[in-house]
Length: 58
Image 1: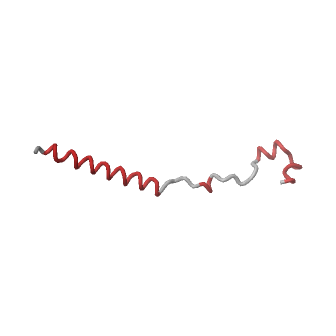
Image 2: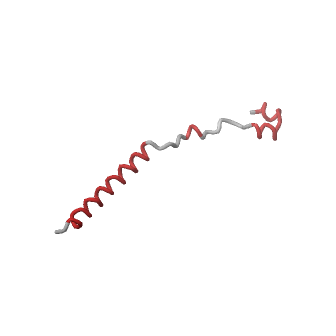
Image 3: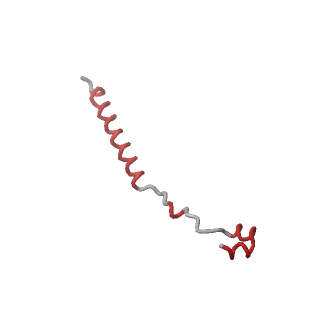
């Protein structure tokens, strides 16, 4: 058996292990935080379009 026949499967397994760990870490430390994107109410453009009377009704 040659060295290439031995090392190729080992590198393939190592690559799969590293790829799996990489995906796991990316999912565990995902930067998406829904609370950062939560809308807290109408913004300044809405107030400019609808006026003070509509803002008082909210």
